[in-house]
Length: 392
Ligand SMILES: *Cc1c(COP(=O)(O)O)cnc(C)c1O
Image (cartoon, rainbow, N blue to C red; front, top):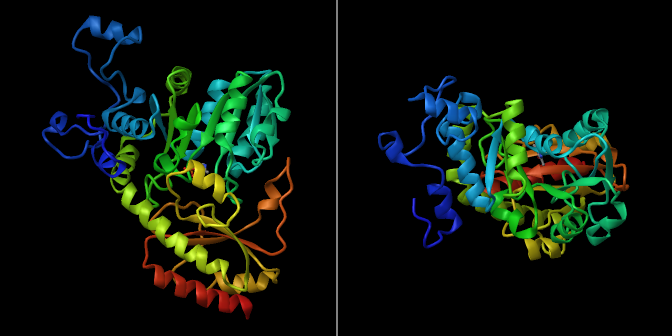
């Protein structure tokens, strides 16, 4: 593979992480099923035992399908290396386990993905790690939340449910001045929408379950790290043995090939629908950083290359029964967890329940929409009918 001149992202996603000549000319790296790998010589086996062997070692330590996915995402995001794991939640939690020890403190954004918060509260605390939460909008003021033992800052931007855009460069500088690492959950933007390593992030994690997989048929996570942080993560990944399977890595690579065109379409339709919703009398506010005038738009414009199709909506105050009348009869927007697939989704959300460092208030009920790849006018008509049912 040649890397000069540097290709643009749409070309990169088609060419990274594959080498047909290794596999009889097959365009895609096949699903590679193996536990035992045979060594040609005793010297090779002993090199593998010393950790000085470049070839395959054992199924748990990375098979070709998994390694190709890792290499492709690391190159796309500009990280030193990547690790593929069985879910997005494994990707958010593994760096915390690998980088923190008893007596350390981790500072987590108050807008963090709920299950990541639950993991910190239930399991890091049990391991003797101090956990506290900070205002996602803190920016440079995050220094006030540091303790002498703060080793990791965990960010997520935009935040889950509430979509605050964090000032990642400011948080990265503050963290580094303190000797702490910055871990970012970059799932919403993907490696294409936010160049994490250009903004000082040490570890960027992705629920590849979402846009990278893109078809609601795989659970997959990817952890990308800079050169200074990668070895500690790689050691932990090997020691605890949480490689993604080859089947799932194959689906991740397949999704990656169309990521640029899918994301462009998700963003185009989401922007059109968000703009329309913002004009509707039933809607109080649209939480979509890519929307001009929305909260976080200025920072989004400064730091991001693109947006995805996920955003929040705050409705005017109205009875829950009216919301159910809307959601129970949608034709195209269906209710379900996760997002990033080709299909549109809508769910009611209650962001205020997950806050401890800040309070979050909305006068009316809140919804989260994922704008899929359907025709945008069909989606608009489904939403228009839904808002009529809402209004009664
Ligand atoms: C969905 C999600 C995860 C977890 O991904 P799973 O593959 O479902 O475990 C992590 N972070 C964010 C921001 C997510 O939206």
